[in-house]
Image 1 (cartoon, rainbow, N blue to C red):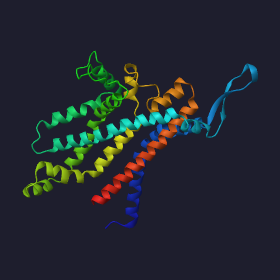
Image 2 (image 1 turned 180 degrees about the vertical axis):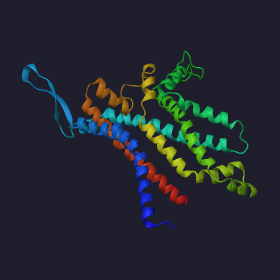
Image 3 (image 1 turned 120 degrees about the vertical axis):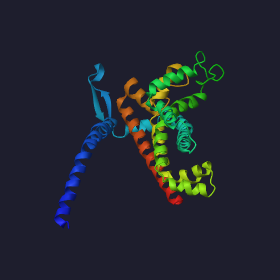
Image 4 (image 1 turned 120 degrees about the horizontal axis):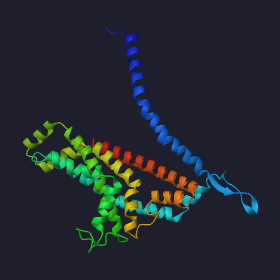
Length: 300
């Protein structure tokens, strides 16, 4: 029989192993997330001003408090860029979740064929770098080279550009989300399906009434990933910008931050705008989690 001191020593040893395993991840998080965020916050409280009278002098960073945040929040172009980002998200997030769910359920169907090939084919676009995928889609959209009706539909128009960007973003992440949902579906006990089929349930009824409710946590996770991806939209519009006059240098918030910080050389307001986006991202994460838990609680 194991004594209490022996159990205590074993528990302490397990805790030490857990600390050792987690420490590298915590160090990386501190070095590449916490530290840059703190530095950006310090920059956001400053402004570069030149002193020295008529002939000027060396530029110096002076403390200005929340002035940069006031300027960022009062910038109409910043809010317009958020509106464009939300427009793409309204198109892309539901499309991503629906397609990923449909692919996962189809691959798990009893009569599915060539599952391995289909799974790799659906996942493959995720392995293509976002900038490269955007350039490839750009050739598909251009009227001179388009095989999908670019000479009839103006994919780079002021309205169509939202669908064009959302389409690229969707196919870039739908394969990853499909793998998450497919793994969740494959983890369900097969006895449930056998019992449902004995009761006369069809494959579609099993998918909609059994599989979907049981993988709701995975659906919440996929939705969260999709929302976070929409808030980080940058590669697709930046790569398509040389091809479309509808995309400006501040078309989405991250492009606005880059333009302020490295084009306009206003690093301090760019830092403030970036932290505002961080706050919006955290808020969206919390909202998605709260809604997902409530939906899961109602279902249970």
